[in-house]
Length: 236
Image (cartoon, rainbow, N blue to C red):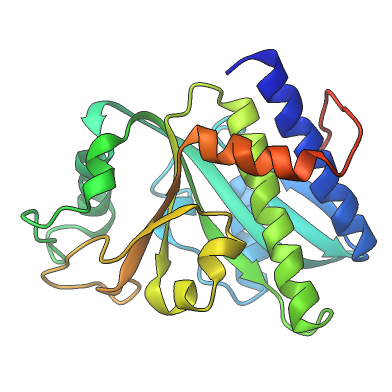
Protein backbone atom coordinates (compact mmCIF):
# COMPACT_ATOMS: atom_id res chain seq x y z
CA UNK A 1 0.00 0.00 0.00
CA UNK A 2 1.51 3.29 -1.12
CA UNK A 3 1.42 6.88 0.23
CA UNK A 4 -1.58 7.77 -1.93
CA UNK A 5 -3.56 4.90 -0.42
CA UNK A 6 -2.66 6.02 3.11
CA UNK A 7 -3.66 9.60 2.28
CA UNK A 8 -6.97 8.29 0.94
CA UNK A 9 -7.60 6.40 4.18
CA UNK A 10 -6.93 9.50 6.29
CA UNK A 11 -9.12 11.65 4.05
CA UNK A 12 -11.94 9.14 4.44
CA UNK A 13 -11.32 9.04 8.20
CA UNK A 14 -11.64 12.83 8.37
CA UNK A 15 -14.88 12.73 6.37
CA UNK A 16 -16.39 10.23 8.81
CA UNK A 17 -15.25 12.28 11.80
CA UNK A 18 -16.85 15.41 10.31
CA UNK A 19 -20.14 13.52 9.89
CA UNK A 20 -19.96 12.42 13.53
CA UNK A 21 -19.51 16.03 14.58
CA UNK A 22 -22.58 16.91 12.51
CA UNK A 23 -24.50 14.29 14.50
CA UNK A 24 -23.49 16.06 17.69
CA UNK A 25 -20.73 13.63 18.69
CA UNK A 26 -17.01 13.84 19.29
CA UNK A 27 -14.80 10.78 19.01
CA UNK A 28 -11.79 9.47 20.90
CA UNK A 29 -9.37 6.64 20.14
CA UNK A 30 -8.61 4.55 23.22
CA UNK A 31 -5.59 2.26 23.13
CA UNK A 32 -5.46 1.12 26.75
CA UNK A 33 -7.85 -1.81 27.11
CA UNK A 34 -7.65 -1.43 30.87
CA UNK A 35 -9.88 1.59 30.16
CA UNK A 36 -11.84 0.15 27.24
CA UNK A 37 -13.18 -2.97 28.95
CA UNK A 38 -14.54 -1.20 32.07
CA UNK A 39 -16.09 1.51 29.85
CA UNK A 40 -17.92 -1.11 27.79
CA UNK A 41 -19.01 -3.03 30.88
CA UNK A 42 -20.29 0.18 32.50
CA UNK A 43 -22.58 0.56 29.48
CA UNK A 44 -23.95 -2.96 29.95
CA UNK A 45 -21.80 -4.72 27.33
CA UNK A 46 -20.39 -8.15 28.11
CA UNK A 47 -16.99 -7.83 26.45
CA UNK A 48 -16.05 -10.78 24.25
CA UNK A 49 -12.89 -12.76 25.08
CA UNK A 50 -11.17 -11.32 21.98
CA UNK A 51 -10.82 -7.96 23.75
CA UNK A 52 -10.15 -9.20 27.26
CA UNK A 53 -6.72 -8.52 28.76
CA UNK A 54 -6.62 -11.97 30.33
CA UNK A 55 -6.50 -13.56 26.87
CA UNK A 56 -4.61 -10.97 24.82
CA UNK A 57 -1.64 -8.76 25.59
CA UNK A 58 -2.61 -5.23 24.54
CA UNK A 59 0.43 -2.97 24.48
CA UNK A 60 -0.92 0.29 23.06
CA UNK A 61 0.24 -0.56 19.54
CA UNK A 62 -1.74 -3.69 18.64
CA UNK A 63 -5.28 -2.56 19.34
CA UNK A 64 -7.59 0.40 19.74
CA UNK A 65 -11.23 1.30 20.20
CA UNK A 66 -13.13 4.25 18.73
CA UNK A 67 -15.66 5.71 21.14
CA UNK A 68 -18.21 8.31 20.09
CA UNK A 69 -19.31 10.67 22.85
CA UNK A 70 -22.38 12.84 23.21
CA UNK A 71 -20.86 15.44 25.52
CA UNK A 72 -18.99 13.31 28.04
CA UNK A 73 -21.28 10.31 27.70
CA UNK A 74 -20.10 7.36 25.52
CA UNK A 75 -22.76 6.39 22.98
CA UNK A 76 -20.98 4.11 20.45
CA UNK A 77 -18.00 1.75 20.59
CA UNK A 78 -16.07 -0.25 18.00
CA UNK A 79 -12.79 -2.05 18.68
CA UNK A 80 -10.02 -3.60 16.59
CA UNK A 81 -6.82 -5.49 17.23
CA UNK A 82 -4.02 -6.95 15.13
CA UNK A 83 -3.37 -10.68 14.90
CA UNK A 84 -0.42 -12.24 13.10
CA UNK A 85 -1.09 -15.81 12.05
CA UNK A 86 2.52 -16.39 10.99
CA UNK A 87 2.62 -19.33 8.60
CA UNK A 88 -0.82 -20.56 9.65
CA UNK A 89 -4.03 -19.91 7.79
CA UNK A 90 -6.55 -17.80 9.65
CA UNK A 91 -8.73 -20.92 9.91
CA UNK A 92 -6.08 -22.78 11.90
CA UNK A 93 -5.13 -19.69 13.89
CA UNK A 94 -8.76 -19.02 14.83
CA UNK A 95 -9.18 -22.62 15.97
CA UNK A 96 -6.12 -22.26 18.21
CA UNK A 97 -7.57 -19.05 19.65
CA UNK A 98 -10.92 -20.69 20.42
CA UNK A 99 -9.22 -23.66 22.08
CA UNK A 100 -7.11 -21.33 24.24
CA UNK A 101 -10.08 -19.18 25.23
CA UNK A 102 -12.73 -21.83 25.81
CA UNK A 103 -10.71 -24.95 26.58
CA UNK A 104 -11.47 -28.63 26.02
CA UNK A 105 -14.94 -28.31 27.52
CA UNK A 106 -16.19 -26.53 24.40
CA UNK A 107 -14.71 -28.32 21.37
CA UNK A 108 -15.41 -27.40 17.76
CA UNK A 109 -15.89 -29.70 14.79
CA UNK A 110 -12.61 -29.33 12.90
CA UNK A 111 -14.08 -31.09 9.87
CA UNK A 112 -16.16 -27.96 9.24
CA UNK A 113 -14.45 -25.26 7.17
CA UNK A 114 -15.51 -21.68 6.48
CA UNK A 115 -13.83 -21.31 3.05
CA UNK A 116 -12.39 -17.75 3.12
CA UNK A 117 -10.62 -18.46 6.40
CA UNK A 118 -8.31 -20.78 4.45
CA UNK A 119 -7.30 -17.95 2.10
CA UNK A 120 -6.26 -15.49 4.83
CA UNK A 121 -2.89 -15.55 6.57
CA UNK A 122 -0.33 -13.14 7.99
CA UNK A 123 -1.42 -9.90 9.61
CA UNK A 124 -5.18 -9.77 10.22
CA UNK A 125 -7.25 -6.98 11.77
CA UNK A 126 -10.02 -8.42 13.94
CA UNK A 127 -12.88 -6.05 14.83
CA UNK A 128 -15.70 -6.49 17.27
CA UNK A 129 -17.45 -5.45 20.48
CA UNK A 130 -19.60 -2.95 18.64
CA UNK A 131 -22.07 -1.18 20.90
CA UNK A 132 -24.69 1.49 20.40
CA UNK A 133 -26.23 2.99 23.54
CA UNK A 134 -30.00 3.37 23.05
CA UNK A 135 -31.76 6.66 23.59
CA UNK A 136 -29.28 8.93 21.83
CA UNK A 137 -30.89 10.20 18.64
CA UNK A 138 -33.25 8.47 16.28
CA UNK A 139 -32.76 4.86 15.20
CA UNK A 140 -31.52 6.05 11.82
CA UNK A 141 -28.98 8.46 13.32
CA UNK A 142 -27.91 5.85 15.84
CA UNK A 143 -27.09 3.36 13.07
CA UNK A 144 -25.37 6.09 11.07
CA UNK A 145 -23.22 6.90 14.09
CA UNK A 146 -22.19 3.25 14.52
CA UNK A 147 -21.45 2.92 10.80
CA UNK A 148 -19.16 5.96 10.91
CA UNK A 149 -17.28 4.64 13.96
CA UNK A 150 -16.89 1.22 12.30
CA UNK A 151 -15.48 2.73 9.11
CA UNK A 152 -13.08 4.89 11.11
CA UNK A 153 -11.81 1.68 12.71
CA UNK A 154 -11.29 0.13 9.28
CA UNK A 155 -9.45 3.16 7.91
CA UNK A 156 -7.19 3.74 10.92
CA UNK A 157 -6.46 0.02 11.18
CA UNK A 158 -5.36 -0.36 7.59
CA UNK A 159 -3.39 2.91 7.65
CA UNK A 160 -1.62 1.81 10.84
CA UNK A 161 -0.99 -1.84 9.93
CA UNK A 162 -0.19 -1.45 6.24
CA UNK A 163 0.72 -5.08 5.54
CA UNK A 164 -2.68 -6.36 6.68
CA UNK A 165 -3.98 -9.26 4.58
CA UNK A 166 -7.64 -8.94 5.62
CA UNK A 167 -10.02 -7.23 8.04
CA UNK A 168 -12.27 -9.77 9.75
CA UNK A 169 -14.94 -10.17 12.41
CA UNK A 170 -17.72 -12.39 13.69
CA UNK A 171 -21.38 -11.45 14.04
CA UNK A 172 -24.54 -13.30 14.92
CA UNK A 173 -26.72 -14.13 11.95
CA UNK A 174 -29.76 -12.33 13.33
CA UNK A 175 -27.75 -9.10 13.52
CA UNK A 176 -26.43 -9.48 9.99
CA UNK A 177 -29.99 -10.06 8.78
CA UNK A 178 -30.82 -6.65 10.28
CA UNK A 179 -28.18 -5.09 7.95
CA UNK A 180 -25.54 -4.77 10.66
CA UNK A 181 -22.99 -6.43 8.38
CA UNK A 182 -23.26 -3.40 6.11
CA UNK A 183 -23.23 -1.08 9.13
CA UNK A 184 -19.94 -2.68 10.18
CA UNK A 185 -18.56 -1.99 6.68
CA UNK A 186 -18.23 -5.67 5.73
CA UNK A 187 -18.24 -6.44 2.00
CA UNK A 188 -18.23 -10.24 2.46
CA UNK A 189 -20.27 -12.40 4.82
CA UNK A 190 -20.13 -16.19 5.15
CA UNK A 191 -22.72 -18.00 7.31
CA UNK A 192 -21.90 -20.72 9.82
CA UNK A 193 -18.40 -19.56 10.65
CA UNK A 194 -17.77 -22.28 13.24
CA UNK A 195 -19.43 -25.59 14.03
CA UNK A 196 -19.40 -26.16 17.76
CA UNK A 197 -19.76 -29.63 19.20
CA UNK A 198 -20.64 -27.98 22.50
CA UNK A 199 -21.19 -24.21 22.17
CA UNK A 200 -20.21 -21.99 25.10
CA UNK A 201 -22.87 -19.66 26.42
CA UNK A 202 -21.54 -16.61 24.58
CA UNK A 203 -21.31 -18.27 21.16
CA UNK A 204 -23.97 -19.63 18.81
CA UNK A 205 -23.95 -22.02 15.88
CA UNK A 206 -25.09 -19.18 13.60
CA UNK A 207 -22.04 -16.90 13.88
CA UNK A 208 -21.20 -15.34 10.51
CA UNK A 209 -17.69 -14.58 9.29
CA UNK A 210 -17.44 -11.00 8.02
CA UNK A 211 -14.37 -9.84 6.14
CA UNK A 212 -12.84 -7.30 3.78
CA UNK A 213 -9.74 -7.51 1.66
CA UNK A 214 -7.64 -4.32 1.81
CA UNK A 215 -8.88 -3.38 -1.67
CA UNK A 216 -12.43 -3.42 -0.29
CA UNK A 217 -11.50 -0.99 2.48
CA UNK A 218 -9.74 1.27 -0.02
CA UNK A 219 -12.82 1.24 -2.23
CA UNK A 220 -14.98 2.25 0.73
CA UNK A 221 -12.44 4.96 1.59
CA UNK A 222 -12.56 6.30 -1.96
CA UNK A 223 -16.29 6.87 -1.53
CA UNK A 224 -15.95 8.60 1.86
CA UNK A 225 -12.89 10.63 0.84
CA UNK A 226 -14.96 12.71 -1.56
CA UNK A 227 -16.49 14.32 1.52
CA UNK A 228 -13.34 16.10 2.68
CA UNK A 229 -10.24 17.90 1.49
CA UNK A 230 -6.86 16.07 1.63
CA UNK A 231 -5.56 15.49 5.14
CA UNK A 232 -2.35 13.68 6.02
CA UNK A 233 -2.76 12.96 9.73
CA UNK A 234 -5.08 11.75 12.45
CA UNK A 235 -5.24 12.71 16.08
CA UNK A 236 -6.69 11.00 19.09
